[in-house]
Image 1 (tube, one colour):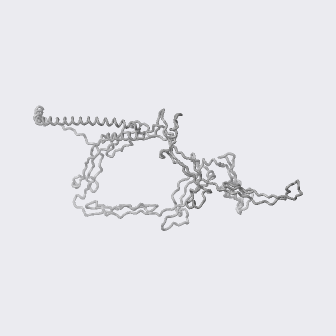
Image 2 (cartoon, rainbow, N blue to C red):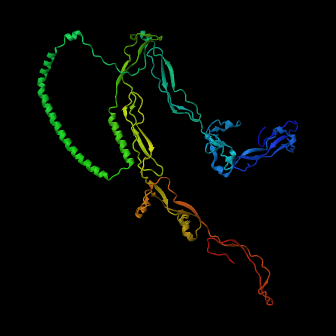
Image 3 (cartoon, one colour):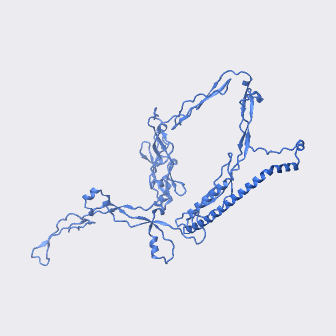
Length: 571
């Protein structure tokens, strides 16, 4: 049992089975747009040989419905529904979809394939699936399949093996290995790379003596720990007995200090004189610099930095301050780490270290830097907004907050997080002036010109006064400052300056077109029909018919009125 145009079989007569058949659904009808419409189709009972028979010869229980509810599509539904296109799936060889198509034995230029995608009609607002008939009312359903080309498979390419390494044992059974690298990875289903490492056993010679029974086992380095604090050794009674009395030690120090006292006084006097000279020099430089700074402030008074420049200067000062403080943030602490070295018997049991070769014993203790995570301060307050006016175009400024590093990460500790954050902002408060806004302006379109589309040779040959057909119109586009809310007594001179063109870089967005196509109608000559047949002869003067003189009439109609030309229609 199938739907829409397919047969529904009956078993009343096994030799000649009548079948229910249904035609295509008709147009959706309804008084209102959207769901609630109805559509119908024809349903009849057909004999298996093709001729139509009575409905009673078919099973009524399997009769298809001839009416169903539907969605009545109106023109304004085009804004609500549209086709949703899925991504193209992987390209599948045609031979995998068609059983009778063999795959080519040798790939030369790639293999033909097919890729599919899902296409459905959806509601634009929420993406809810809808009937395909709604979208098909406006445009055909996009294709679900397309041809594609599968590149030929590329197998993995590896280099030659390196030479074998030396044997891991100087005697007895050991191992040695060799390596190779990947030159080109596999692509498009090519064969995978083989093993890049090979091992083999080696035996330089038989071992002699007990050394061959034991070998060293070296463990990993332990964590880096701080050394224990050094304790002062307690003084022994013997030390106290041999200690010199305090008075004798003082007298000895005074005797040793007498020869050096005069030299120390001379050295102090020289240092005082040098310090006095440096102090006088610094006072002189400070006075000169103070005068220069006053001059600089006077010069800078007439210059007003924009908010962007002030924000950049503030960021630079913050970074310099962090760099100066960063010198105190490198708190390095040296510790130590150990590892275990044991002597192992060939059977796997631990033996005394003296049984292994003492010449090859590795170190078990080394210095290290103790790991510390990065530490930062709390966030500073947000800086002032870089914009000091409200933008009519909706563009916002930026404000920044920072934090400083208290401890840099060392020894593999956690790295520092971001030290600066930015977010968009708008100036807050009353009395904030509007920002200067720039807009695109354009002149009126010029007259339609056809001659600009002609070549130089065509211009010389033709009479340009009578050109018609497709042409081009041009206009000028420029950037101006948009008028703001100003007082009513603004002078006319200032209003003229407000509309003066400025640099085009100040305007946002794409500028309007400066050219457009146009059309000049070509002149149409008057077109008339053929003359009609002559009418009957009519007396020239009905009152005096004795003259026997008259006239006959015929006429013709105007088919096309003259346009664009200079001539008129004939009589």
